[in-house]
Length: 141
Picture 1 (tube, rainbow, N blue to C red):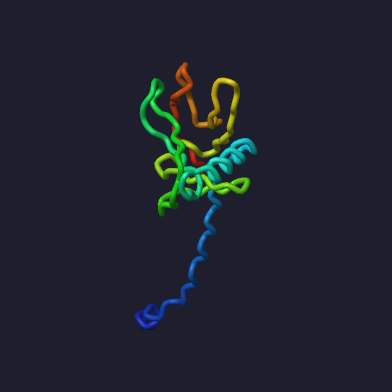
Picture 2: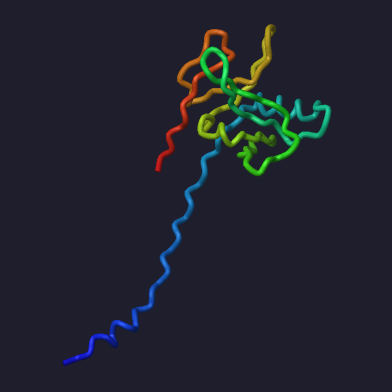
């Protein structure tokens, strides 16, 4: 009769499993040439030193949400940093899923000048153009 207790006390050496490579993060936003040029102009004209523009979403308006754009004086640890065409856009972390795939443009005409957000996550907008309704982007696994 053989003693099986000794053979099970020396387990076979284990090989560490290879770590899966992290998938590349999609760029949250991209800028048109007109938007990048306007961000450069705003950066030069700012009253104090800024690192770029901060973009976000706030609740309110006819359709429920609106885009926010403001000077960014510093990079917060939670900001999503987008560098495109030589300028820096800082995206509020609460807005990232609503802005994935967005193209930021700039339009000026006789009546107004503004940043325009061509956002695939926008499902409606109010008639006055001041607010939108957004849905979070669907992330593919």
